[in-house]
Length: 99
Image 1: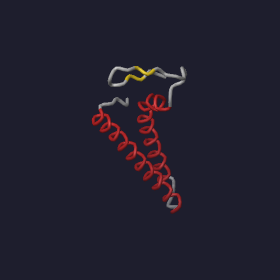
Image 2: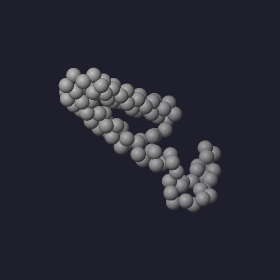
Image 3: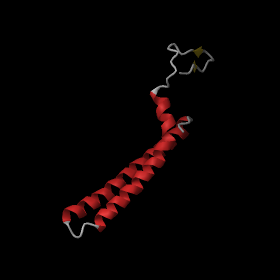
Image 4: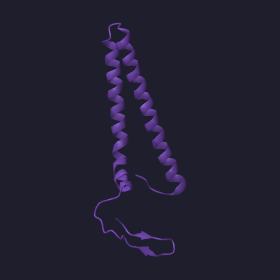
């Protein structure tokens, strides 16, 4: 872990001396990979839902499942998109760097 520098210049050293990063550092390092991964999942879910619609042959249950896959893919993409913009707004408001 890292040392903490206070605004008055006082440095607080890490008492644990641990070599493992904290949870925030792990999430910070994973963030640049999560958004592209979410886009790929969105694409494959759209393809899977479309394929299920094409192969449903008029079966109402299969057609409904295909529409649900597409709907859930769009909902997931909207959640990812909104979370990205919330992170961008937090970075601008508080002057911190998340990515």
